[in-house]
Amino acid sequence: MTQDESLDLVKQAIREAGLRATPARIATLQLLRQSTSPLTHAVVAEHLASTGVDKATAFRNLNDMTEAGLLRRTEVGDHVWRFEAIRGDAEHDSGHPHFLCVDCGTVSCLDHVKLTAGSRRVSEQVGEVTEILLRGHCNDCR
Ligand SMILES: [Zn+2]
Ligand SMILES: [Zn+2]
Image 1 (cartoon, rainbow, N blue to C red):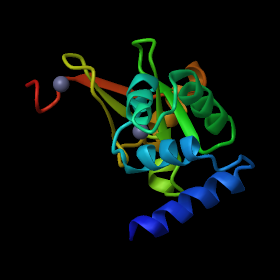
Image 2: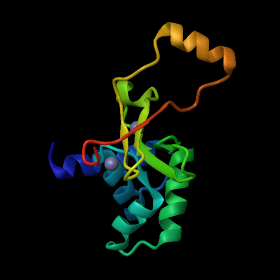
Image 3: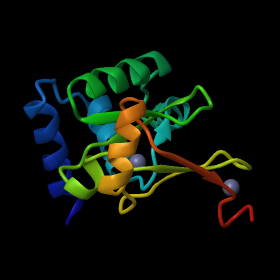
C-alpha cells in the first residue's frame, strides 16, 4: 500500500465517523494505525508537536476520535490512558488482552489471545470483563 492510499483511507475513515478530517486528526490516526502497540497521549502529542499541534489539541482529538469509534482507550493499571486504532480487523478489534512490562512500562497487543468459552462463562459470573491484562518482563528487560 502506498503512502497516498493509506492517507486517503485514513481521511475516509475519519469522515465516515462523522468528524472533520483535520491534519491533526489525520496524523493521529496514521500514527496509531501504524503502531503495533497502544500509545499514550504524551507519545502521540510528542509525535504531533513536530507538525505544530499543541498538547491540548492532541488530547481533545484523541477523545473525539475515541467517542467517534475510531480509537479504543485502554488503561492497564498505571492510571495512564493509552489509545489504539480500531482497524476494521476483527481479530484486533474484538478486544484483545494486553501485555504490560512491569520494568519499562511498554504495553503490547496480544491479538490472538482470547478467553475460552469456559473462561468467559466463569468471568461473567463475577462481572463484565472490560480489559484482560498480562504482566511480566518483556524480551528487552528479561
Ligand atoms: Zn520491558
Ligand atoms: Zn491492543
